[in-house]
Image (cartoon, rainbow, N blue to C red; front, side, top):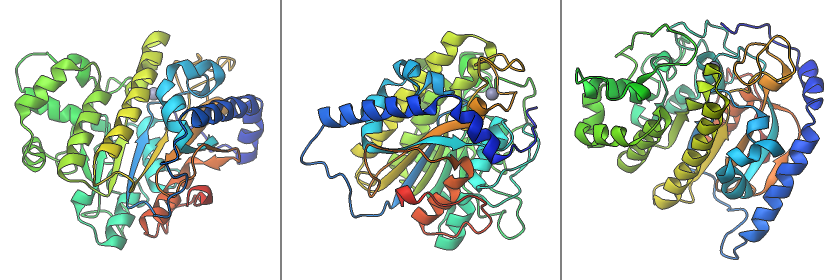
Length: 388
Ligand SMILES: [Zn+2]
């Protein structure tokens, strides 16, 4: 359990500055400027007057540190983000997470705009309304217009809160690709064991809850894909995140929802202690983000209409904190594990801009709400005016 006391904002920021974020910022700005110059096209508008009609959020996940992402020594692991996406993005260099650094509770906090305080490993819905509920209620949207593609059984409650004014019947459609694979594979042996591991921290396998997630039969009918194709595809891939992208692309193709949330989680294999597996997973997440952006550009329902937000749920422990073991875990609650980044791309979002002011991870929901024209009335964060 990673339960920690909420840290005072000022102390996190002053500590974060000790991480030499200025060096981080300068490096990103330089790379971004160079790439923008290299790829300059007179046909590409810097700012489109159109407001995004659709929004996709990707949590770059399972805890990723600056050192293995946007810091100068980390950029080797994220060539697609640095070379392709950053030149088209507004990039926030200091996104601080003051909440509990467990993946489910932190992702739930990202989705509610409040620091949720429940036990990370409990099968429970967030206490505060999610952005999916705000969007669906205020805009009178059906469940199929808001989707969550989540990494493990532990996330099956993320689409819908237990808030008395929202909650039941107003949540997102949640797909757990691993659970789907499990059902599809039935009793045919352990072909997909490498894809089915549920999480990297707890041996507790939470029971799946069919009330909150889409059944395999409903999903295959809705997306018109065959389980045989799904299994054949699963045989060719190396990780659960690739399975999530595959489902996301099908959802875009067949349903084209206005709002989609994809939680990547492969990076959390860092808990095994193998640095190479951790950086392999970062490279993979980097590639999958670029593939997703490409899918957006290739789809007429999404091209030119979609805002994409990419952010880690939080960081990981620093190498210098005696209470931790470096990249392996996120237990100390130190500045490095709490400070991360976010990028936003899409129509009406400025390209190749870095924002150095500190923001919080709970600012995401009010920002999404402003974009999706709904009222996140219980969210505690503030809208990020730089992308609105
Ligand atoms: Zn973890």
